[in-house]
Structures are given as structure tokens and as C-alpha cells.
Image 1 (tube, protein in one colour):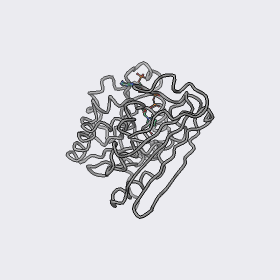
Image 2 (cartoon, protein in one colour):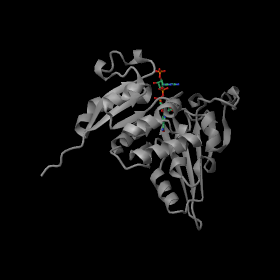
Image 3 (cartoon, rainbow, N blue to C red):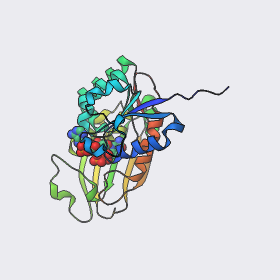
Image 4 (cartoon, helix red, strand yellow):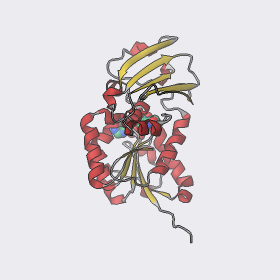
Length: 278
Ligand SMILES: NC(=O)c1ccc[n+]([C@@H]2O[C@H](COP(=O)([O-])OP(=O)(O)OC[C@H]3O[C@@H](n4cnc5c(N)ncnc54)[C@H](OP(=O)(O)O)[C@@H]3O)[C@@H](O)[C@H]2O)c1
């Protein structure tokens, strides 16, 4: 007997680099994987004209309910996670593409509670994080003692706000821009530290204030970003990974991360009312 494929109805919120990529792939390959697009929303709807079928364009994000999505994918801005995350989870599973938003402890708590209450899954894509599920398993066993992530990129790849001086990224050579907790880092570099935010979600016992992060500007890195993860467990256990993520000059997102998002989306079939790293 052949098993009938479960069709997942997908809503995409944001049509920047990632949104465009995901919408295209769902339209090209979704049918054979059981994914169908039910809406696309972008702050500036003009960008969608001629690229997305008229009937799929959602003009007012509050009307997402009418489209009956099973999974809503946010790929735009942490503000949308804050403003709509709880509403999304009341109706659908939610893949949060800007997990740096979860560094806000209040929002983090609200989203976890909404997921639990409605029996929907809050999915956190692993993005450029290598070994996220291993970190989560170590965390769940109670043996995770420390976690450190260093992200090194060409200065043109940083989008910094807040307390880092703007000339900081212009110097030649290698320079540490910030070293501290991921909780402190997220508001300073919200578009650059989603990988660290995913790690902080996997390492729930340490949380955003317990996971340490470092961002490094390095003019030698014109072809790739480097993501290093150092995990410390009990009784001398440790793991150190170094990931080289090919990226064009000026690109915030490494090219392998697009594929990683696509794989993450395919995992979103419902894992109960909880947070799930995918
Ligand atoms: N989890 C990860 O590993 C990972 C990796 C890469 C990126 N990201 C995150 O995913 C998101 C999208 O990345 P991207 O590379 O696609 O970015 P992008 O190409 O710069 O596109 C940004 C998108 O967000 C929208 N946007 C910007 N500010 C907004 C606001 N205040 N309210 C509503 N919409 C807003 C833009 O709308 P307009 O067209 O109207 O300007 C556009 O659709 C970002 O938050 C980024 O940090 C996460």
C-alpha cells in the first residue's frame, strides 16, 4: 500500500534574499516534496509584482489566518517575530528565520508558552551552525558546561548597530569587534548572529546570557565566512568545529546557508508544542 504524502501549506513572510530563494524553490520543487505555497508577504509589496502569482500575494500580514498555512516561515526582521510570532503560533507551526529576536527573554518566554499552549512547533533553523542537534542532546543530558561561537567575516559582511564604532570594520587585517554574551551581541549585530542565537536556543540550560560569542572582522576573508564552535562538556569532554561558509564580498549570508534553510523547511511537519532545532 502506498502512503499518501502529507501536503504542507507554507506561508513566507519576507521577500529579501532568503524569501526569494525559498519561494522559488517551493514553486519549482515543492510539489514532489509535499510543499505548497499559500501566501507571500513583503513589507514592500511592489517587490512581489511579476514574481509571485497575484493570488499568492498577501497585502496585510494580519490576514495570514485566511490562508490556512500549516507552516509560517519568517525571513525578514526580528521585529516581525516580536509583533506576529505569538499570533502565528496560534494557527501554524512557525519557522523563525531571525532567531536573534529570541534574545529578548520576554519574547522568548511568550513564544515558548504559545507553542506549548497551541501544540504548535517553534522551529529554529540551524543556519550556519554545525552540530546544533549534538549541542541540544548534550544540553538535554545535563552535561553541557560551556559554549563559545566565533564568527569571522570580511568587514563588508557586517551590519552592525549600537555600540560598535562604525570605523571598527574599516581597518585592514584582523580585529575582534566584540566578545561577550550572545544576549549582548544580538542587539548589536542582529543580522550577523542568527547562528549564535540558534546555538543559544540549542543550549537552553546556558541560555543567551550563558553562551559566549565573538565577532571578528578580517580583510583576508574575501571568499568565505568562518564559524567556529567550542563545546565543553563534563569530565574533560570538548568539541571544536571550524566551518568555512563560501560567501561573496558584502554578503551577510553564506551561500551554504540557503541550502540549510531549505533542508530546515522540509523538517517542519509538526513536532508538538515545543522548540525544535532543525
Ligand atoms: N538563521 C540564520 O542563520 C539566518 C541566515 C541569514 C539571514 N537570516 C535572517 O533572515 C532575515 C532575512 O535575511 P535576508 O538575507 O533575506 O535579508 P534581506 O535580503 O536584507 O531582506 C530583508 C527582508 O526583510 C524585510 N524587512 C527589513 N526590515 C523590516 C522591518 N522592519 N519590517 C518588516 N520587514 C522588514 C525586507 O523588506 P523590504 O523588501 O520591504 O525592504 C526584506 O524582505 C534577516 O532577519 C536575517 O538576519 C538568518
